[in-house]
Image 1: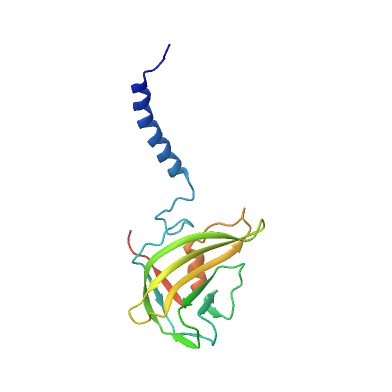
Image 2 (image 1 turned 45 degrees about the vertical axis):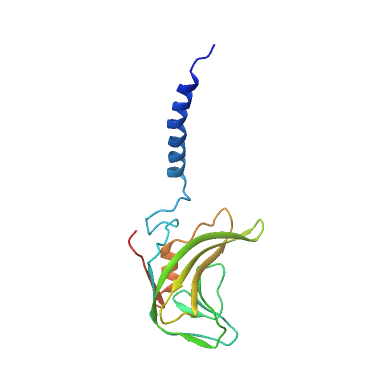
Amino acid sequence: MMLFSRGYLYRLALVVVPAIVLVASACNPMARTQDVNSPYYSIPAGSRLVLHQDLNYPEGKAHVDIQHGRVVPALDNWAVGCELELRKLGPGVVTADTFTVRRAEVSREWVNRPSTMRFYRTIYLDSAKQSNVIKMVCQTWDYPLHGDDIPMSEIHEALGGVATLEFAQQ
Protein backbone atom coordinates (compact mmCIF):
# COMPACT_ATOMS: atom_id res chain seq x y z
CA MET A 1 0.00 0.00 0.00
CA MET A 2 1.39 3.37 -1.06
CA LEU A 3 0.91 6.25 1.38
CA PHE A 4 1.57 9.03 -1.17
CA SER A 5 1.31 9.02 -4.94
CA ARG A 6 4.41 9.54 -7.06
CA GLY A 7 3.01 12.81 -8.38
CA TYR A 8 2.55 14.13 -4.86
CA LEU A 9 6.11 13.16 -3.87
CA TYR A 10 7.47 14.78 -7.02
CA ARG A 11 5.64 18.07 -6.31
CA LEU A 12 6.74 17.95 -2.69
CA ALA A 13 10.37 17.48 -3.79
CA LEU A 14 10.06 20.50 -6.10
CA VAL A 15 9.22 22.63 -3.07
CA VAL A 16 11.34 21.04 -0.34
CA VAL A 17 14.68 20.66 -2.17
CA PRO A 18 14.95 24.34 -3.26
CA ALA A 19 13.93 25.41 0.26
CA ILE A 20 16.70 23.29 1.77
CA VAL A 21 19.25 24.75 -0.66
CA LEU A 22 18.17 28.32 0.16
CA VAL A 23 18.32 27.74 3.90
CA ALA A 24 21.73 26.04 3.65
CA SER A 25 23.21 28.88 1.61
CA ALA A 26 21.76 31.50 3.98
CA CYS A 27 23.31 29.71 6.96
CA ASN A 28 26.70 29.29 5.27
CA PRO A 29 29.19 31.65 6.92
CA MET A 30 31.43 31.32 3.84
CA ALA A 31 28.79 32.89 1.60
CA ARG A 32 29.93 36.23 0.22
CA THR A 33 28.23 39.27 1.70
CA GLN A 34 27.81 42.98 0.96
CA ASP A 35 28.78 43.92 4.52
CA VAL A 36 32.19 45.60 4.13
CA ASN A 37 33.01 44.80 7.79
CA SER A 38 32.64 41.06 7.23
CA PRO A 39 35.62 38.85 6.38
CA TYR A 40 33.32 37.41 3.69
CA TYR A 41 32.90 40.73 1.88
CA SER A 42 33.38 40.40 -1.85
CA ILE A 43 35.20 43.37 -3.39
CA PRO A 44 33.09 44.38 -6.40
CA ALA A 45 34.56 44.93 -9.85
CA GLY A 46 34.82 48.63 -10.58
CA SER A 47 36.16 49.43 -7.12
CA ARG A 48 39.34 51.50 -6.98
CA LEU A 49 42.76 51.25 -5.38
CA VAL A 50 44.11 54.76 -4.85
CA LEU A 51 47.88 54.82 -4.46
CA HIS A 52 48.77 58.00 -2.54
CA GLN A 53 52.51 58.01 -3.09
CA ASP A 54 55.18 56.82 -5.49
CA LEU A 55 56.61 53.41 -4.63
CA ASN A 56 60.16 52.38 -5.53
CA TYR A 57 60.95 48.74 -6.06
CA PRO A 58 64.52 47.46 -6.11
CA GLU A 59 66.53 45.68 -8.74
CA GLY A 60 65.54 42.08 -9.26
CA LYS A 61 62.12 42.42 -7.60
CA ALA A 62 58.73 42.58 -9.27
CA HIS A 63 56.65 43.60 -6.27
CA VAL A 64 56.33 46.19 -3.51
CA ASP A 65 55.53 44.98 0.02
CA ILE A 66 53.21 47.12 2.17
CA GLN A 67 52.51 46.34 5.83
CA HIS A 68 51.42 48.39 8.86
CA GLY A 69 50.94 51.45 6.62
CA ARG A 70 54.44 51.58 5.14
CA VAL A 71 56.60 50.01 2.46
CA VAL A 72 58.70 47.20 3.96
CA PRO A 73 61.57 45.11 2.54
CA ALA A 74 59.66 41.86 3.19
CA LEU A 75 56.32 40.82 4.69
CA ASP A 76 55.91 39.34 8.14
CA ASN A 77 53.69 36.43 7.09
CA TRP A 78 51.93 36.30 10.48
CA ALA A 79 50.42 39.79 10.07
CA VAL A 80 48.28 41.05 7.19
CA GLY A 81 50.41 42.56 4.46
CA CYS A 82 49.92 43.36 0.78
CA GLU A 83 52.15 42.88 -2.25
CA LEU A 84 51.65 45.09 -5.27
CA GLU A 85 52.77 42.80 -8.10
CA LEU A 86 54.39 44.03 -11.31
CA ARG A 87 55.13 42.59 -14.75
CA LYS A 88 58.76 43.74 -14.99
CA LEU A 89 61.70 43.37 -12.66
CA GLY A 90 63.06 46.49 -11.01
CA PRO A 91 64.51 48.82 -10.38
CA GLY A 92 61.47 50.93 -11.01
CA VAL A 93 58.78 53.22 -9.65
CA VAL A 94 55.02 52.82 -9.41
CA THR A 95 53.70 56.37 -9.41
CA ALA A 96 50.73 57.58 -7.38
CA ASP A 97 47.66 56.64 -9.39
CA THR A 98 44.13 55.29 -9.23
CA PHE A 99 43.75 51.67 -10.33
CA THR A 100 40.47 50.03 -11.26
CA VAL A 101 39.64 46.65 -9.72
CA ARG A 102 38.91 44.26 -12.58
CA ARG A 103 38.02 41.40 -10.24
CA ALA A 104 38.88 40.11 -6.77
CA GLU A 105 39.17 36.61 -5.35
CA VAL A 106 39.36 35.15 -1.86
CA SER A 107 41.47 32.04 -1.34
CA ARG A 108 43.28 29.91 1.19
CA GLU A 109 45.96 27.28 0.84
CA TRP A 110 48.09 25.07 3.01
CA VAL A 111 51.59 26.34 3.77
CA ASN A 112 52.53 23.48 6.07
CA ARG A 113 50.00 20.71 6.68
CA PRO A 114 48.35 20.43 9.17
CA SER A 115 49.56 23.44 11.08
CA THR A 116 49.62 26.53 8.83
CA MET A 117 47.35 28.02 6.18
CA ARG A 118 47.77 31.09 3.99
CA PHE A 119 44.63 33.25 3.81
CA TYR A 120 44.71 35.76 0.97
CA ARG A 121 42.79 38.10 -1.32
CA THR A 122 43.91 38.72 -4.88
CA ILE A 123 42.79 42.02 -6.37
CA TYR A 124 43.38 42.30 -10.14
CA LEU A 125 44.11 45.88 -11.20
CA ASP A 126 43.99 47.99 -14.37
CA SER A 127 45.50 51.39 -15.09
CA ALA A 128 45.55 53.34 -18.35
CA LYS A 129 48.90 54.87 -17.34
CA GLN A 130 50.71 51.96 -15.65
CA SER A 131 50.26 48.63 -17.42
CA ASN A 132 53.19 47.25 -15.41
CA VAL A 133 50.92 46.86 -12.35
CA ILE A 134 49.12 43.49 -12.40
CA LYS A 135 47.49 42.91 -9.02
CA MET A 136 47.66 43.32 -5.28
CA VAL A 137 47.70 40.26 -3.03
CA CYS A 138 46.91 40.76 0.66
CA GLN A 139 47.72 37.79 2.86
CA THR A 140 48.40 36.39 6.28
CA TRP A 141 49.30 33.00 7.70
CA ASP A 142 47.36 31.46 10.55
CA TYR A 143 46.42 28.17 12.12
CA PRO A 144 43.58 26.44 10.24
CA LEU A 145 41.15 26.49 13.15
CA HIS A 146 41.92 30.11 14.06
CA GLY A 147 42.29 31.70 10.64
CA ASP A 148 39.62 33.21 8.44
CA ASP A 149 39.32 35.31 5.31
CA ILE A 150 40.93 38.72 5.72
CA PRO A 151 38.45 41.48 6.65
CA MET A 152 38.69 44.85 4.91
CA SER A 153 39.58 46.59 8.20
CA GLU A 154 42.83 44.59 8.35
CA ILE A 155 43.63 45.36 4.70
CA HIS A 156 43.04 49.07 5.39
CA GLU A 157 45.39 48.84 8.40
CA ALA A 158 48.04 47.10 6.29
CA LEU A 159 47.83 49.77 3.55
CA GLY A 160 47.63 52.70 5.99
CA GLY A 161 48.38 56.00 4.24
CA VAL A 162 50.12 54.30 1.31
CA ALA A 163 46.90 53.34 -0.48
CA THR A 164 43.13 53.28 -0.04
CA LEU A 165 40.50 50.88 -1.36
CA GLU A 166 37.28 52.59 -2.48
CA PHE A 167 34.42 50.16 -3.07
CA ALA A 168 32.00 50.38 -5.98
CA GLN A 169 28.28 50.10 -5.24
CA GLN A 170 26.98 46.56 -5.71
